[in-house]
Image (cartoon, rainbow, N blue to C red):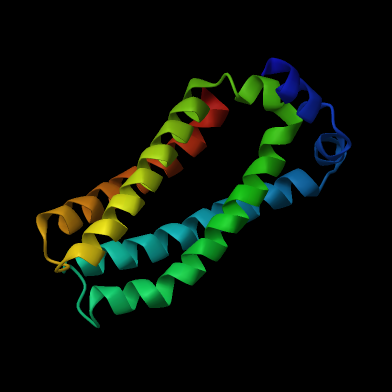
Length: 152
């Protein structure tokens, strides 16, 4: 696996990102902005499920906001790859990065559990409420761990 990370770090795209005066900073700014948008959308969906926000039924809010959240997540992944490539061999050993990946995995499993719970019954069920709370916390932790990568 180390050879794969080294090959990615030595790729032409990684060199372009590393040597460009604009590409890495632009990817960094876009990454942070996309994280903000993504979390705002996730928070709106989860807070509606938790009945903190009033409005249309949670299913309607989710149907309306999830496409935008998916778009923001796509930007996060694309810019995240650009940020990873120049220093891939170092970053993949970073404890904050590894923890971030683990929490992302938890957040994705939680999303699936939330979808299943919403399909099974009322949006006021304990499972739906619990997964909405886990979602809010897990995505905040992902963002915090992302910022910690530079300092660990």
